[in-house]
Image 1 (tube, rainbow, N blue to C red):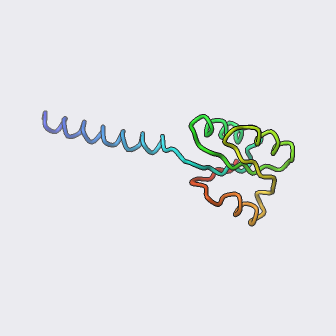
Image 2 (tube, rainbow, N blue to C red):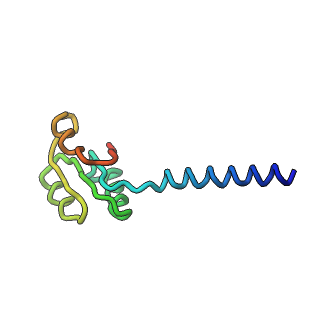
Image 3 (spheres, rainbow, N blue to C red):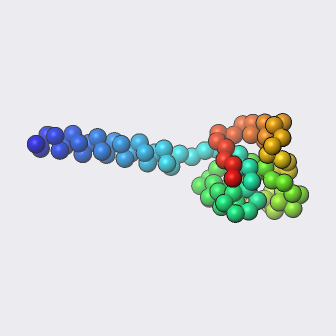
Length: 99
């Protein structure tokens, strides 16, 4: 019984480590569409706080100016439904998020 409990505990510990690593993965550069307010803005703030760079696709010039003032954020004005805009913005990113 003791050996079984030790093996089970070891497996559980390894599983916890793997899921913890996956949850805490650091992305160097993340594309965020819809990041000017609400959930998207919270995502940008969290990514920046965690040390990631962000490429934010936003609709308005005002949002570009606001987000570009944040260290680590590159804001691009465009439409998320325009394939070429998204393709250009997402190039070089490790992950993507749309809101």
